Length: 413
Image (tube, rainbow, N blue to C red; front, side, top):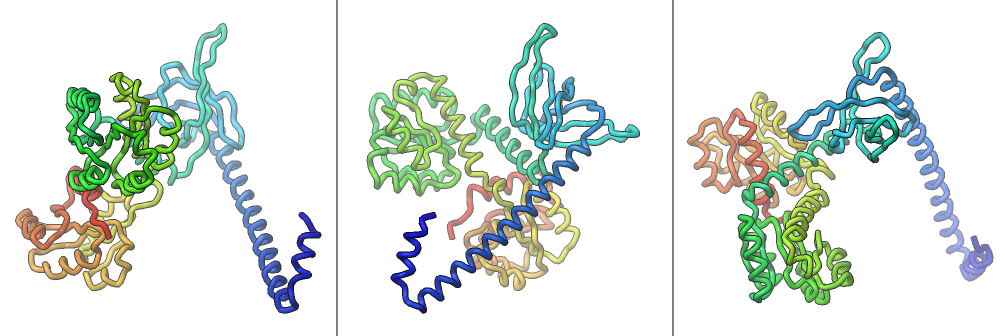
């Protein structure tokens, strides 16, 4: 701290300014003390949580179970070390972890205890007795478990979709040259749907209209040096992953900084393994970075007076990471801010079309879904302008399809 500089500054101030400076400094000191106290309380809470974690998992380790979506595999395991920051396990070489594992202990008196842990490091160990994996784990909260499960489930669905080539539309952005045409033919041979578009602006417009999942910038190096094109690239739909083919690392860094998900050098783009690994990394990486339902809970408004319907749909939506709020009538719904919810579900009985239209007009930036007791009500609800309809009671697969369609058809505010 340079006191002479501070003194020189104060000497140039008049009395009224000095009084204001004193107030500001006093306020800063109070804020700093308050923050320090809060930090101390948080550290104390963290230590208590760690102590509880350590106490809860002490006992005889029975098994460790991988909880990858769609799979549950048990592995032999021994507890090597335990501390306040987590614990270290020795696991057999067949262990293929997801981010979360479930550990089961037999505590004092034979009481079974379960705890979810996140795998944070793993290395192979070998000695005269054999080989094993050393796995470091840390405790996770229930909310972290929920978010990680959703994330891994989304990644599994994305990989499955890519494997089956189901619904994957790729935009090849660049001029019609011999090299670009060869690239497109190679991608088509993998059963992807490919559309060639010559410019960035029409490509971004097309991506919105046809809900493309990936864009490949065939002339990435040219785009990296054009500020106007980079600005257009920044307007890409949030669901669009982008791969750029570049000539050098300088262009690669510029495009990655501009938001491109993956860059591939020109010489590597000619190799199928490099190209298709880049496509997979871009799509999975984009999904992780986007993280809509993971970084913040998606909020849904349910407009219905029927508690049975409300409970059924709430149960289904919460399983997908949605936070639900309920009102009885459309009039009550219109009291909220029009951008407060990501989705609106409203009961449709075949006669309340005017109320539905008011909701559609008011919540213009969010899809409105009609909840229909009879199948015949569905087409009539669509005629009012709703994004989709859901037959009640809700079917698990129908709810999933509705949510997926909403992600691709949200209207801009």
